[in-house]
Amino acid sequence: QVQLVESGGGLVQPGGSLRLSCAASGSIFSIVAMNWYRQAPGKQREFVAGITKSGTTNYEDSVKGRFTISRDNAKNTVYLQMNSLKPEDAAVYHCNAKELRVGVLFDAWGQGTQVTVSS
Image 1 (spheres, one colour):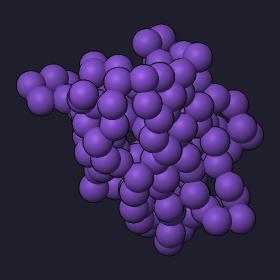
Image 2: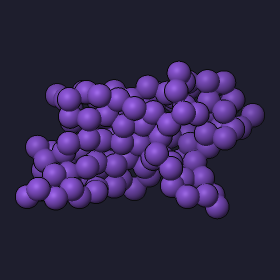
Image 3: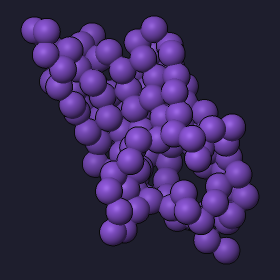
Image 4: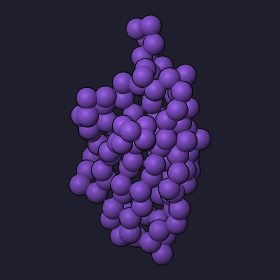
């Protein structure tokens, strides 16, 4: 199994930047994609950005051009660089790993990191 630990959340003013990190450990060889999701109070968890094992990235429309997902394979870490933050970006951000084991996809989740955007 894969364990995920997020870090980097905090309080930032509108227009500011934050970089989230997600460190993976355990059965990392089984990971085929890693994603960031977020959940604001009273709302469903939503996809934010993802990166596949081959390096293909995709983004939710509202963050395109502002957020960048990247990875450091040597550190088994995925990052989410968030620029031009808006109050509506405030949420708990969760790291997700898609594991492929015996032909079946499994989800691993981190505990989440809080992002607050406020002046």
